Length: 124
Length: 124
DNA sequence: TTTCGGTACTTTGTTATACAAGGTATTAAA
DNA sequence: TTTAATACCTTGTATAACAAAGTACCGAAA
Image 1 (tube, rainbow over the protein chains, first blue to last red):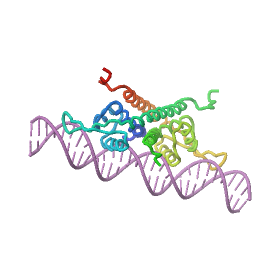
Image 2 (cartoon, rainbow over the protein chains, first blue to last red):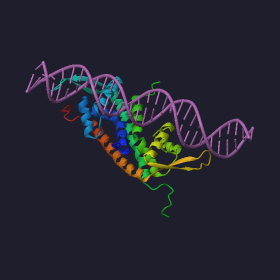
Image 3 (cartoon, each protein chain N blue to C red):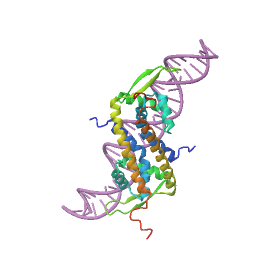
Image 4 (cartoon, each protein chain N blue to C red):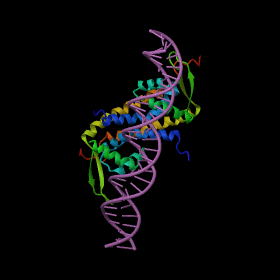
């Protein structure tokens, strides 16, 4: 087996960390139903599966961040289109700030780690 | 209570996602022991506690990403200084790429969500 | 020589979350 | 009336972070 390298594992964890945020971002662009959210995220290499998404959408709805409406499908059963609420928009804008702070945090330690250690005299 | 807003919760998840990566970044800058890692991460607002860090360091060591040496402390018990191994460096460079891809992914849906929806004719 | 404060490392039990896998329901067309 | 496609939902499991408590070391003061 050994498909689970540390790298693959860490990548998964990173994706998970931004999952909720990503879903809200997608819905800020427009109303979507579960499968289309999955597809949009897949398009940018953020993998989610149904079993993860459905409970998450329900949780966000229960928190008042999302609401939904039923809409006929051209083929098959009706679709549950989720849309972001006003409250959702407010919180999302806070998450925008959170995300940017996180990027800044990581970049700062990342940049530090790409330079020789402070006090390194190995070149003298 | 209600200290657990959705925003606070999401922030926590984001932090968790980059935890492992962040620890490796810190150690790429130089050898550190647990408390000093916690401090360095705290400095950039990435909160970790002992109960999280110790098991994680042990896991990374068992995977061959880290090794450690004991070193006397000016005061108190000896410290376990962790250092990144060659293998750890290799994997970390892959994580650098992973991180940058994730940032790109999120930014792309984020930027999309800040523009009016495609096909929006509300201004005509 | 014992106790105490500070520091450091470790473990245990709980909780949250993602996911695999399986289930139900709707539709239209064969 | 079966089948295929689509969509929604649930259950059980594994993993990971965390709170909390425990162990151990050290030096200095009592």
